[in-house]
Image (cartoon, rainbow, N blue to C red; front, side, top):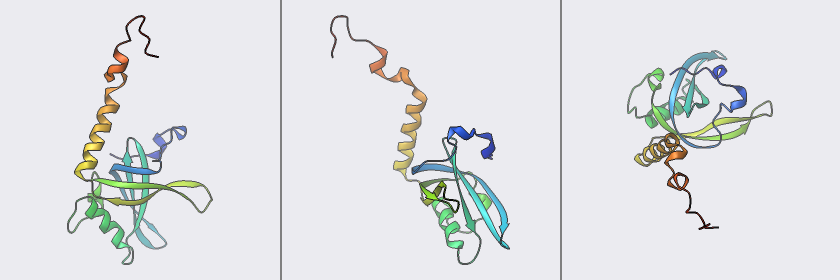
Length: 147
């Protein structure tokens, strides 16, 4: 899935807030900066995003290799092959050069069976809605106010 941040309303909080997430790699884009090749990777969870930049230099290559391992790639890979992979991420807020606070990818790791169970439970609760709560489906008998 290709994400265009401009498609999300600016008042809707389009960026992930600090916390731990199971996210999908939604976009991998090559570009050049200061004469060096870099890759911008976008992670998405519940329609909110965080992006990170990976420099493809000898000194910084370890970061994208660690991301690939966390996504389940044990050997040689192409960065665009990460698109669609699932990974556990930690997001923090950090001040940018302009002094504003931004969501930043602090770390990433492999998704464990426990992470999948928790995500499944959260998705089930979100999709169930209010009607699935037995406490809201019936009212106390007349005259027996429990409070």
